[in-house]
Image 1 (cartoon, rainbow, N blue to C red):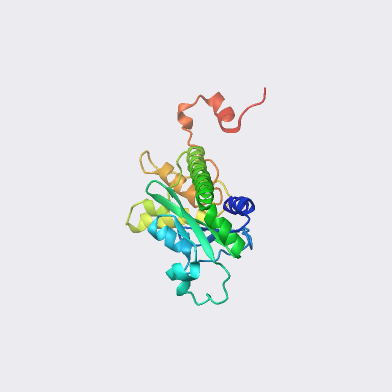
Image 2 (image 1 turned 30 degrees about the horizontal axis):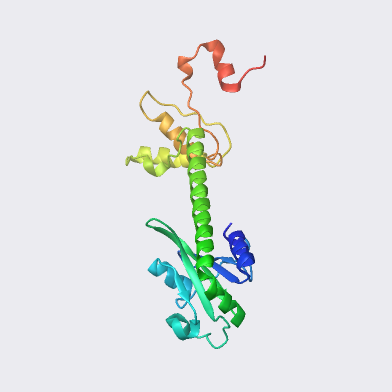
Length: 237
């Protein structure tokens, strides 16, 4: 989504655009593009976007090699053809997620960038708001999926490490249960009431290859005999 946003800004402004996250990784590049298969490049400390994230404010630089300290100290300044830049942070209240930068190369681009910098800044600001909205939407979707997964699994996430016991017999039972969890057979757990049979069943499920599937605890003693089969396996009309 960040790459698509970058391409839209670049098309409208007819200039090079970069988008970085708060770790200063390039997540949008109108020149080289970003794909899921490509490793993300990281910006150097001389970058205007890095400065924008650190200062949490927009920047307008008319003569980059003269007015911006990062360009003066950049080891690649002689090979760089960027002459003017504007950038704006991707920010929402106290939270900052990265920055968007617009780069002018030729004299005509510099002139257009400076003459319309207010319009460009307003446009980039609106696009940054869309990025924040998309990020929040993705975050909420992830939380909902995790909640659904927990509900489907009957909140079954229980690692063996959470079962406390130090006696030799108890440690032996835990190791056996951990080993059985790697198989694919049905497991019978026997013990008196209150000894933790269901706790072990949950831990075995969590450690098994079926951990992403549902865990359903059924008290068979509470069901009439003629209903147990349909409760466990369903029924046909």
